[in-house]
Length: 281
Ligand code: C2E
Ligand code: MG
Ligand code: MG
Ligand code: MG
Image (cartoon, rainbow, N blue to C red; front, side, top):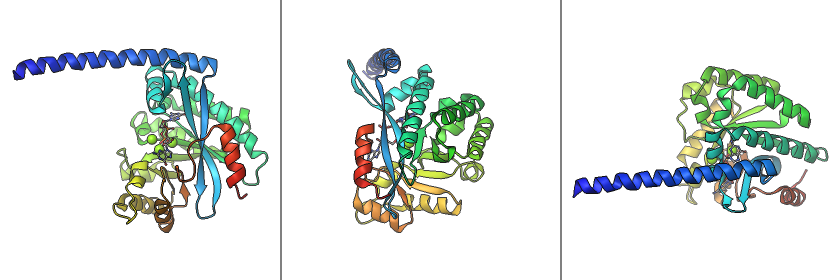
């Protein structure tokens, strides 16, 4: 019976794989079309300096609702885009759109907004040409590098480590801020952390959600804040949803925060409304 069961499991497993592959092919085809026809949107989630009560910047996050597939989560279509190479045109679109948008917002602002864009590990397969493309887009869109931030995850550092470090260093020297997204979920060694050209740690949402009302299980968030401080890095918390999480983070001197407590990612028009209503600068 055990043997038979095993056999069945193999069949089920194969069917699952076929189903997943089929879905990926459909997503790829629809995504390609969406990129060509302008069906992808950039949303913006505010980053807040809670102590000073100001909006310091926004993170660009892609949104896609397909006519046939409905809403497709970025986690899903980004991974398909990475596997198929579509990530490059997707990135090109996001960069141009977000950089020129933020540059436009900044013309009327006393304190210009910073723009953070997520970079996929796959984009660092050719780090040198990536640096050139970033510089070109920033200069085309007239967004000063000081207002531009790259979010990478620890997985970016898995390939081409030396070339990646060199590319990051070049961008840092150019004025761009480098942040490690979802920090604490990967396996970056502390040795790397000390030598890498990075400016900021972004504490993963899961550790912020661990912070309960009685501050139980807040050790990891606290540890990352202290780590950042001793390495002289900036630190930001993502996924802040509750007032008591904000208070805990402020008490531990994590000034920068992002999360539903302040705002969800918003389309251009809604972000403009949000800025008008919440902006103290
Ligand atoms: P991420 O860069 O870590 O983005 C944070 C995610 O957390 C976003 O999900 C955001 O909507 C969500 N979030 C923000 N605040 C809260 C909160 O308070 N509570 C909860 N539960 N969630 C919150 P989203 O937009 O679905 O994006 C998922 C991931 O997809 C991103 O994770 C990023 O890795 C990737 N992604 C999105 N846009 C791009 C892009 O343009 N390029 C690349 N390479 N990746 C992207
Ligand atoms: Mg991010
Ligand atoms: Mg993140
Ligand atoms: Mg994430």
